[in-house]
Length: 423
Ligand code: PLP
Image (cartoon, rainbow, N blue to C red):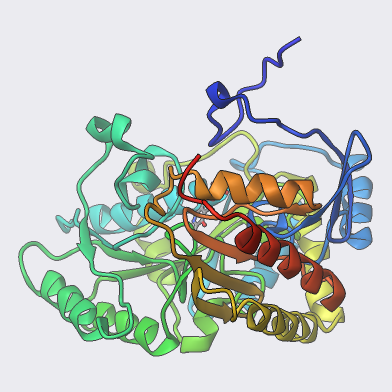
């Protein structure tokens, strides 16, 4: 019998097998036929410490039988209060208010609405949004609008609003990118906000840029009084080596988006942190200026309990040390690929390693990624290349031996398939 399930980012017409995963532990997933998969992408960049992390699992179990769900408009609960306080303490200075939602996309939607609401409530006509080329911020209408346009969102183009794009600050293009931002800030109606993925553009192809550029972006925004929104949905929770990527640039944004690893990746929760100025522009005696956003599961207590357990792990354990060790293993793995002529541009930041494959057509829809994925699956590795970009973003508990194993699967896949560009 065919399954009624409609999967995300899946072309069901191709009839590709969809393995059923029944359990997980640490860096491993187990399929219903007993086949084990090393989770090379942290289950879509969410799992940080490892699957079914015992402290997080225990917190979820305890909370689920104490307070499972409640309306968060006009009511609060201890897990959300504790979590909000901890997030304010952990994030860059000036982010004093925490708004909870459910996913990375909603964290960004909330950020965009906060920015627009801020200027609206202050009586300033500011609607322009600035973005970086190749960005990805989610798949809802607002987040698609501030992301790269292409095959992913072509069908929905009539629904998307216009934004203005700053070129990606690739090596040799940094000044052009900064100049473009400066120009956009200086001309026309003042922009409302500039939204960035800090240090790494994930879905855009694991494109890295240095902390100095992130700092320069922030400085230009500050000079022109343009709100600076940092989307740490992917980069947060240690992926780039520090708890948050913006720490490396010493940047304190006006709005910060968190999701994915906020709960260690076990359950869905997101948070959008905002400056006092943005909160204050929504606070008055007039109900018309309140922040008009909610969803049924805002600040779900079980998810908040998981996030508090995640924060306790960061407090009590040497997570940065674990990430540093993982980084060394990733460097060693990348070095083993050096002799393979089809690969170029090896790069690594924190717990993310990436390399590009030279193929005639490396676009997102090319055959390369699914064929690499299928090869890795057969060899016990969960991999999901982005077009011709192969990357690993494993959970922090992954051992050097497991990383070496992952790289040997990648090397085998790249080396033994003579004709990647033909069917
Ligand atoms: N922002 C960034 C930088 C992301 O990488 C993603 C997802 O990968 C999102 C937002 C959207 O997150 P979600 O898939 O949880 O909606």
